Image (cartoon, rainbow, N blue to C red):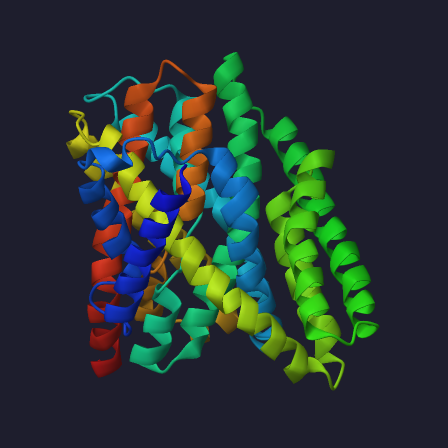
Length: 395
C-alpha cells in the first residue's frame, strides 16, 4: 500500500465526513464502501488490498479501544446483564440457529456442509454500530437502545472470533461439530482475554496517575490499545476482549480521580482524529476489495441469508427479552425490532471473512456468498436505520 494512495483515500474520507455531518439517510460507512467499489474500477487503486492482518493488527485495536474508553460506565452498569446475555448465550444461539437455517435453505442453491453453514453464521453475528449509535440517539432521544447496541457490538466481536476460530479449525480439518470442545475453548479464550485486559488496564491506569504530561498519557493509551491486543493474541486468548476490557478499566480508573475530565480531553484530542481516519481507510478498502467478489451467481441465496440473519436475530432478542420479567417490561416489540435492525455487519465480519479466504483456498463461492450478505446488511440496514427510528418516535 503506497503512501500517496493512503493520503488520497484519507482525503476522500475527509470529504465524505465533512459533507455527511448528520449521517442520517446515508451513514458514512455505507457511502465509503460504495465509493470504494467505484474506485476499484480505476487502475490507480489496483495495488490496494485489505487483509485480515491489516484489519486485526492496525485498524481493530484503535477502533475497539476508542469505543471502550468512551463508553459510559453508568450505561454499562445499567445494561450489563442484557449486554452480557446477548454477547454470550445470545450470540451462540444466533450463530447456531442461523447456521441451521443456512444449512437447510442452501440445498437448492449450493451444497454447504453443516460446519460451513455455522461458519457463515459466525461471520455474520458480530455487529458494527458505526454511525448507527449517533443516529439512534439523535432520532429517538432514547439512549437505552443506543447503549445496548453499542455495548453489544463491543463485546460480541470477541466472542464471535472465538466461535469462528473453533469452527474454522473444524471446517479445515473436516471434523464434526463438538459442543464440549467448543464450550471449553470458548470459556478459556474469552476468560483469558478479559483477565489480561483487567490487569493491563489497571496497571497502565495506575501508571498514568504518575504521568503529568498529557502527551505521555496519550502514549500510554496507545500501549493499552495495541499492547493488550497483541499480547493476548500472542498467548492464545482473545485480543479483542483484552483491548475492550483494558479500555473500560482505564476509563474506570480515571473515573475515580478528579483528573478524569483532563484525561478524557487528552485522549479525545488524539483518538477522535484517529477514529474517522481509520474508518475512512477501512471502509474504502473494503469497497475496493469487495468488487472482486461481486460477480458471482449466488446473489439470491445471499439475499435469503441476509434476511435470515435479521429474522434469527429478532427471534433470539425477542426470546431473551420476553423470558426475563424486568426486560419484558422495558423492551417493546418496536425496541427489539430497532435493536435487530441496528445490528449491521461491518469491520469484524469482513476481517473474519478474509481470514476464511486465506485459510480455505478452494472455497471462493463460500467467500463471495458471505461477502455479498455482509454488503447487503451494510447498505440496506444503514439506509433503513433513520426512517425506522423516526417511525418509532412518532408511534
